[in-house]
Image (tube, rainbow, N blue to C red; front, side):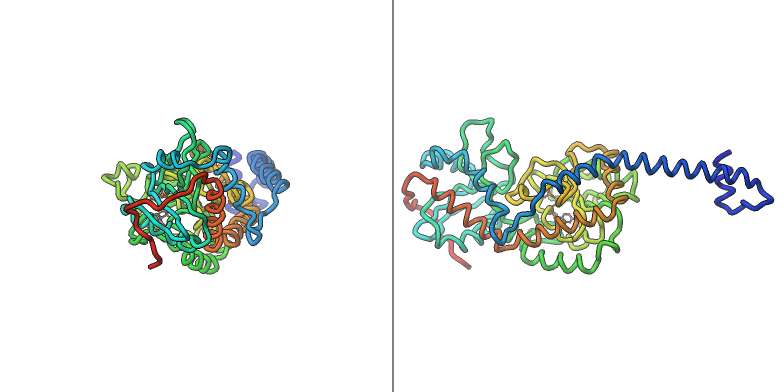
Amino acid sequence: LTIFAGRLCEEQFCSVDNDARLCKENENIDHRRSSLYVKETNERYEKYLVAIRNAEQNHEECNNTKHECFKSVIARDLRPFREKGVSEEMIEAARTRGTFYQIIKGKLYREKDCMFPARCAGIEHFLLKIVGNLSDMDLVINTRDYPQSSEYFGNAMPIFSFSKTPQYYDIMYPAWAFWEGGPAISLYPRGLGRWDQHRKSLNKASLEIPWEKKESRGFFRGSRTNSERDNLILLSRNKPHLVDAQYTKNQAWKSNEDTLHATPASEVSLESHCTYKYLFNFRGVAASFRYKHLFLCRSLVFHVGDEWMEFYYYAMKPWIHYIPVPKNADQKELEDLIEFARNNDDLSKKIAHRGRDFIWNNLRMSDVTYFWKQLLKSYGKLVVYEPVLKKDLINIKKE
Ligand code: UDP
């Protein structure tokens, strides 16, 4: 009856000739329903609103022009080596797990072979900028995705890795992909890199599509490097009005099974991500390079999982710079978070812009170089022996 009456009113049949009393009753029901809806939605969102309020109360934005933002990461990662220092024996034990470098009298040397030459080049780009001011040291730099020194397997090994979870002793360094050697996809056939250029192109793209013009939907494009991504892909298939998330091929792709039983989607440039308000980031094998780019769209970043880190992640705070999403969030929870963002547009915009400003102001190429310099200065102080140039190393020079 109510629905019938509702339809009558909607269709503007509420004339005196029709049953006006019925329509009035229906209006009341509609009103009660909508207040109930608002109450329910507020209750549903209350936990998110409280989380934002609490985060804002306790937050003070760091300022990297004073080099404040990433200092604590260096101290934290070097802590396991502080007491005994870094000995030659420790380096020898670690050598098989990474590429061996030496810095001797302001020059950079490397073992001849590098497992991933473009990654070594991406690392050396920064090392060559700072090598002149560093003390002599040996370095084992892991160019694989995965960290190498787990706290579950023996003592801490002095190995540098770009990404890790708190269960690893690896010392985090800025990934090669800030310069070159990132994943090669059809849009970036020479591999994702040149953060300096992406900063500019993403900034331009974000200015061309301001918040109000963005689509109020979630977005993700990437390959199935981790099944933690599946629930968002499934939500996208069930509720495409909320999110467009699809799997692309990667080099390991063999059949549609690798794209969760669907034809692989075409790749989408990072700049085109800026069309959407809500951009999802997931870990891959380790942390995903996509993360820093998403912020520069001035879109709201939904960061799934909190274990996999790069050096700059610690300085970014949940609910301040991004929306944190539990790694095992089911479709309902993902839906709730997207709906929350849609229904709280001003808040969403505020967080999006804070995240963007953080990356724009604090993660410049000069910040990356500075981090490398501080990291190796601090590491150099822990070296407890006199490194001697080894035979068979090659001198790495600026191109
Ligand atoms: N990527 C992209 N557009 C796409 C798919 C991927 O720009 O349509 C980029 C993305 O920035 C990421 C990289 O390609 O850094 C590799 O993405 P993928 O999902 O394959 O692997 P991930 O490194 O995230 O595990």
